[in-house]
Image (cartoon, rainbow, N blue to C red):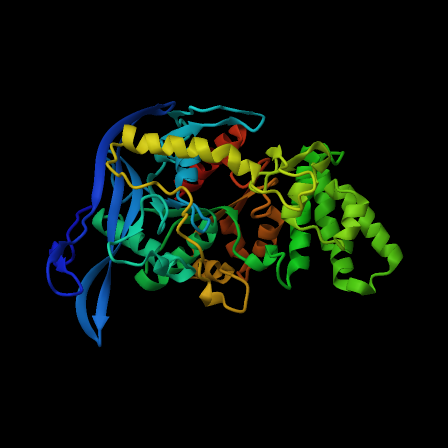
Length: 493
């Protein structure tokens, strides 16, 4: 990746037209490494740093040149001495919005990963990095992308990062990074994949559609980890709260069973919760105040049994248990709260009468080890010279703009439909966690069930479920299975 502008210029004048200031250039540090796997030794090159993104600037229809707008933080891995026309390349990001790519990078896909221990036995600081024998690098080159204001990504000097704190501009920026990388690295003929997690699934689908519609770039596959393509399916704040209650119930049941609040076989209980949501519970919520008292009593009793909450509490919620309150209420008798990102994690309630937990204990458990590992890894092993704070979560993002969806729920399933209709070779992999209250699995299932696609297209969608939360790789057996499944997905081309 070179650092020149399209015209070869390296400087520009400021707004006053006086002293020139240096034009930003790419800053990528390259190092070579090897990793011994069961199948043999991987020799690879790692590059980390920032890539300058530019935009065409027009004023009154007159071309003003390619103006630097952002310096995008990336870490890339390429296998040495391979044919780029057959070697896959995978672009990876997390979500938030406002999250860096540290989670998928250091937790699942990269050649090194952080060892955090287990939910019942987390490792204390200082934390440690280990070789990742299940890295996706064995099957594909990797490019981890940090969107605006995350990682080391910043607007150029004098630029406004807030301009990119929104759906459309975020998609444009990530799309341009992928186009630019494929052009400079001669990867247009490579099999290409995108992996996104959480809000990164929204970004992944929208970027895939934009790459196709703007640049006619076809992808081979999308991996959607803990997906949410229809925000209306899990919105407790507005008119679709009833739909959210139905979609969250099977996850409540899974978490309550994990903590011993619901007795029975987990799979059977989940199936019962799913059937109850599709049947009598849906009808009861739709009836509102028309629901007869006897039927309401029956619904309260079943909800309490499936959620592990008291009948009195369920009745006071008017049959509508909100997920943050569920996290706070389930283990109140033990003085504990359960995690939203991963309901297996627990932490102490800050107050015995708290209505909501003050922080997610599952995030408390993982933020420090991932942050420490990434900071050490970039400088200590990859030779990064960046002194900027690596923003694991973008503290500068105060508001994320969804102006394109004003007056309606955020919805990108139509973009997935579009790219799957246009590209009959595009395959999609969707991963679900049973203990995930950030993107509940039943909501994602309902989204897939309502896709407007030919029957044959559904053969190109694969699904996998994990006994974990939002991040399947936080559970060691699930991490290994997830990594193997993604590698198999990519290797099928």
